[in-house]
Image 1 (cartoon, helix red, strand yellow):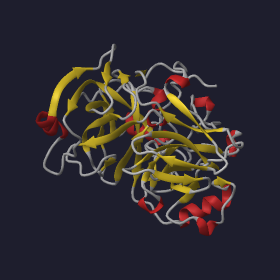
Image 2: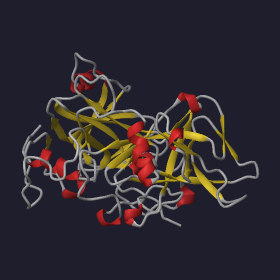
Image 3: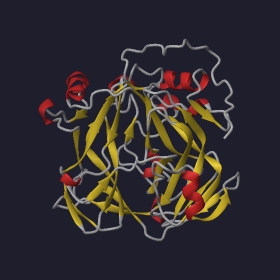
Image 4: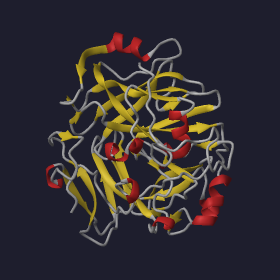
Length: 387
């Protein structure tokens, strides 16, 4: 993989990130630029575009070549990803400008344009982008000699790969498309609840407000099945045999061609059918302070046999009052496991884990940087026409 990276930004940066307040934590946008331009811990086949750098993450781009594989895999300590591709690939295909159709129910591996050369105390975490999770495309990051999905060990030097598995809709993907994002972490900041209680007392992380003692293993999030009353649309269930989604067509597809609306009932409950995909919303309005980011735990057996939120990352500034956003509801991507499962209005369905940044980012989530969901209620991905 080529290591050539062109300069992205005209202003020079000092060797230390400006505004750094803590020695450990997630890196903000200005620190990510340092890793691209100066330390070259983030590298790319093609020049990294300025809009790839988000407040606390970097968008990752698909490379020009993909493989359909027989099954998902992790390389393990002894193998590279390419070794596993050589063993399990069914066929190789070009993405290119015209793109390739990725069928639902199949598993694909694509090497990303970006690669890493991290230092010893620097690790990384990946997740799907919000719009990708909302169309039920299951995508995970894989690294050479990796033992976990979506986790990059400290001091990793090597390529990055995306595992892509469309679950509901076939997609048309091209080289350069952005399905996932990566966060870079320095050191190992505390993972206890106390660091979350302090910003909650200062900012009120969710509305309606909860007591600080309710923050246990994260900030609880509940589901809204009441909406504006009986008959109101409280969610969507994906159609089983809908058409292709071109990832570059925005505000394009009619909602009714891809989704069944879910309406509130007098019982304020919903039976999740196995293997069905739902878009629902939280009761709470979420706030992410400018010096923090948040992640929704994807699956927790203590709250039921279902998975919530494939793309569970919230950038600094999401729903924050400083950006005239008095909290923003979390959109939940929900899929039941194995058996039908009943959820009721106000039922706890997940937990938000807030993580401190080493410093406040020089850009925050919102309309000024092209963010799509700052003032969302119940909202489908940006590929669909908004009502």
